[in-house]
Amino acid sequence: MDPSTQETGAVTGTKDKDYNLIWFVEQCLSNALRLETYVSDAERNGDTELADFFRRAQGESRKGAEQGKEHLRRRLAG
Image (tube, rainbow, N blue to C red):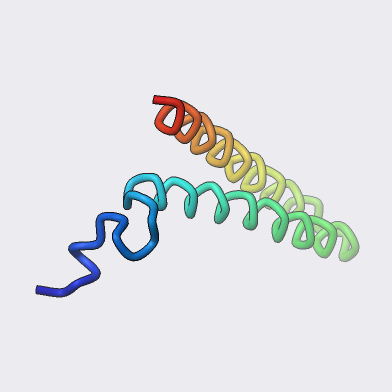
């Protein structure tokens, strides 16, 4: 069997589901930061449609991060 399918925290010290949530939150936050650059690039080039698109995507990334953080709070508190 592939060892990566069996990981339950022995290697990382963190249960898979908690690690996965932590990873998800980090990726959402990283995406929100990156999209800030994309918004600025679009605005600098006068493309308000694209800037608005990236702002909406950034909002969704922030929302995903907040939802992930809430899941983590509940799971790690229990």
